[in-house]
Image (cartoon, rainbow, N blue to C red; front, side, top):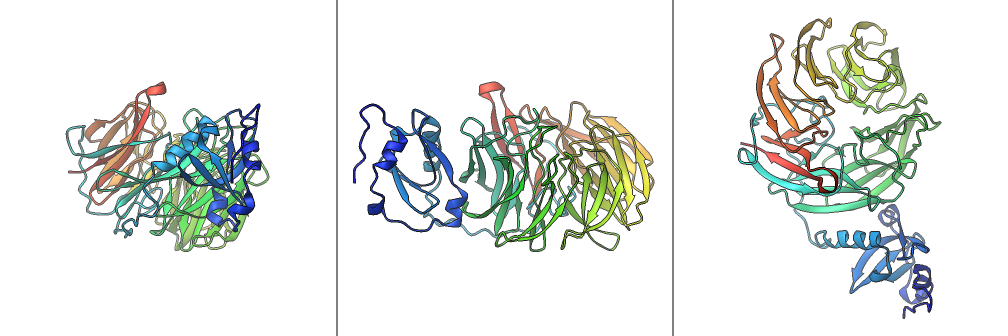
Length: 499
């Protein structure tokens, strides 16, 4: 087999056509290989082929097409973006290496909003209230690319998503919990990133959900919501195009995180198009179980399941309503007109009340009785647009977009106190015991007491100059994603903080 050069142009098409495909053999591409198909382009940009990466051997890049045919291309003939992609793959740990089995620990932060699905860490956590580069800092590791997804923690691993706009790639990344060492980084999509998103959004904003065996990540690309299941060694197990997703009125990107319920993984897509809706898949196989339509309006909240008013309810705000669904079937249980068109926060609950806040274009925080009566127990004109709220001992705590913290009595909405923290806020607060950790967009973490008697500051801590991701807290450790530098010098970091 030989690769010939064109006398006038060394094109990818020429190289591909000169390969003796018969001599290389053919086998059916696996589901994982089909899921990682990407476009490969030659140095001129004129020729391309769609295939998955297999290996690089002595400057020869082995690719697998969807029909199973194997292609071998010279690395030096590929585009700079493709050569960068190959280099990134080569930086991964040897895929033949047997990594330590993952055993989840009680209280691990496996999904968005943590072990209780409401932003509250497991009990008896001993977390520092003060830290710096010299104090209570276990490790700091660089996160390649850019993203606002929060870290999750499963056993001895920490996972998050990221994206590289220059190479048009989206990744799932795994770090060793004890050291911060990067264990693997799997590219799950190439190309098709939306050309326009909100300045405060990224191409890797939804937080991963993990059932202890598989990690589920959602991305917006190629005018769709892509849902991917990977094992904890970074291998793609299955992927689905969950929804078409192509907003017209508000091109702000995508944000909702996947939700796990029993054997299901559930994702939402809400935009001004006909495929707006909720869809549930079997976690192990990716088989679709149910699909439910949502209004054709743009909104960004993550769905959540709470046991409220005597039953499990899938709760979702936005599209000018608060709605409850049966999480096993996707059938609506009740809907109450409330909040506004677009919300971003995830709902919380207590006893038979559910709480939501938003958004755009209107401001509202609301408490609704979740028994199907539609009763609005109380409402006010405050909004937490991007942030989720916290419920603790009968009181609702919130930090709004402008960095003002509130405490309301959950039963009737009575304001107990409010306090300006400072700076704009996008991240959601997290509760550890009776202490709240809340970061602003400039990387300042405010620590204060969750108590109705009055605002009590505990500490404030600066890390980096950005704070959009929410912390993950478990095993007496706090994991926080932030960024340093601006422009070309900007870099993201993941921190582990502990006593």
